[in-house]
Image (cartoon, rainbow, N blue to C red):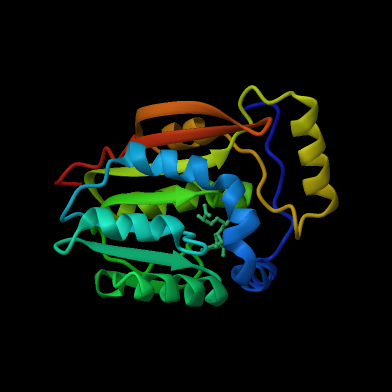
Length: 228
Ligand SMILES: C[S@@+](CC[C@H](N)C(=O)[O-])C[C@H]1O[C@@H](n2cnc3c(N)ncnc32)[C@H](O)[C@@H]1O
């Protein structure tokens, strides 16, 4: 296991759901705005094309899902899964207002159990969500994503990163995560390494500095072949 080890998630799924339900009305500003630039960078790297079928896991207030719905055009289909019904309502309103709801299907559910058929998606996107799953669950989530991705399908991730992370700010952040695990919920993880361990091929990887905290933007490809 890579050192230093990543921190545990000391919060139940029920607590996560209640937390994001409460946050949903205020998520666009200022909380989501902090991460938005990096989420958009990751989405750009994923290079979604017209006609594709794309899933976003943990869509939050729907900012990126709206972009995905625009990128796939009228011939594509977008899906979103999020544990928070509050986030689902906010996103649904946003998509209706933009007249995009007809090409999007939303689902309120724990992403540990994806309700989609095998090999459904050309691309899957996750921004600041993989790091909310506890350490033993991360490989299971990546396995579930592999199952629903088509062979050679892409997975794009923006996340806080534990790589090269020895700054005072990162230590302070991890201290706050341990002290208030219900509220400071994201914690830095090893994204590229987790993807490699799960059998993905790394297509691109960038390290970013998010106001002093390290982040990783990674696009990986599902190696699964047609006959698997
Ligand atoms: C930090 S927010 C990020 C939202 C959005 N992706 C963004 O970048 O603004 C994490 C999102 O993941 C959702 N989430 C948390 N745990 C989840 C789970 N187990 N299954 C599905 N969604 C989850 C939360 O409800 C929330 O909307």
